[in-house]
Length: 548
Image (cartoon, rainbow, N blue to C red; front, top):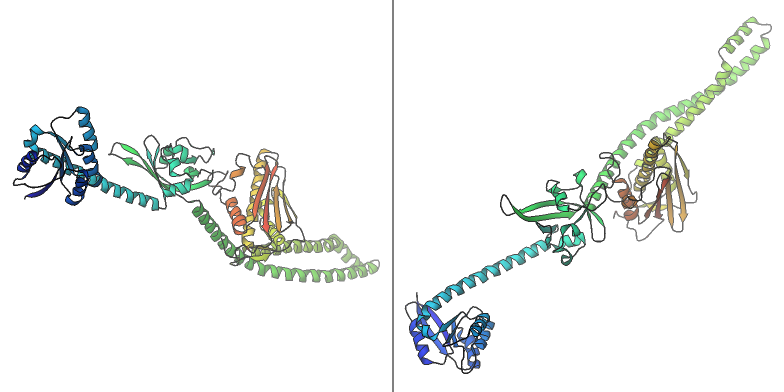
């Protein structure tokens, strides 16, 4: 197939042009040539003629070849450009090549121009294909970049030496490091993974994550990854790290995909706890109802027995007085009195009422426990309601008595003038119960190391301006300074695996701070004790009536 080949000739020499035309105008090429002799004509021809090949003399009488090359490459970077010359220095040749000349032809070789053009075409085609591939790669790279930026999970690619190569938007948001700060830096400087036990930053986070069988999440209890952000915020992360394999034997680096699951797990834990509390509450309410009925029978019967006993004692006293008055003259009366004395009837008349009174006290305690169970387990309304904080404390103390009664004395100092507080009372009950149980455990822990002296738990309520304060103080083992700033972190626990979930104080903090816009403060001293102080606003119009 004949190819139309456009040549822009700025040689200005007709004999060379005819030779070139003769060489190129054959069965494969149809030669079309335009001659120009000025820079303006050259610029105009470049745009209008759109040549496949530009041929010029390096030393053209009106403008030099470098100028022609520069003007051509501005508009048509793929156009072939030949310099036809008789003499050219090595320096000049290098300058031409740098400017983009495809070939430099000596006028003695002009008869070989067809072969030179064909070779140049092959090179030009290869270069065009390369550029197309590069453009395609650039488009794909842009699509990949946009895709990575749009993905919600953090994606970090690292080299074998541990340097960060890729750092997407989600990774920047989670770690709080910018791409500029992260790329090129060692992963251990940006991905600061904490060791749960020592609270120290791991020297080799990649190896640590790989030890968790590539996939890591908060359910792998012994290897729960905690990420320390740029601002030292602690986050639970879940994800996967995978080697970038070159082949079956070698790999070029690692890609880490992860997400911040701190809030997700906190909500899941709270939902689970709420579900458990609801189930326990329903069970407790049912038990309380079942207990309440026989308690009423017992109360009624005790009241009947007490009333009947009072009548019996009065009758017995009168009979005894009568028998005593005739015993000196009546043997039968004397025998009855002797038998009465042998049975210790007077003692029974004193002991039985005392026993009934004690039964009343025990029954009253059971009634209070049943009432406390019913109040504690009563489901909360959807919104907040004004509630009696002192009553909440008393209810929780009653409910938790079996937990602390064997190791501690518990006393309360409740402000009788405390106002009602806008709150979710069932959530507050959970917080108070958790605080009392924690205080009990702290005392028990201390008693393991001491002479098991009875501990003390003190709960005090007070009013401070527009806030109600609840202070829970214990004489337990205290909290070490090294971990006191971590106790409210989700899933942090000092207890052995399986004995503590690390959810109690975290959920307490969330309930008080996030749900009620209050605060929790802690003051502690090792081997002396701890005080948790809860602050609750009495009422706040900005507090939403729905769960945050």
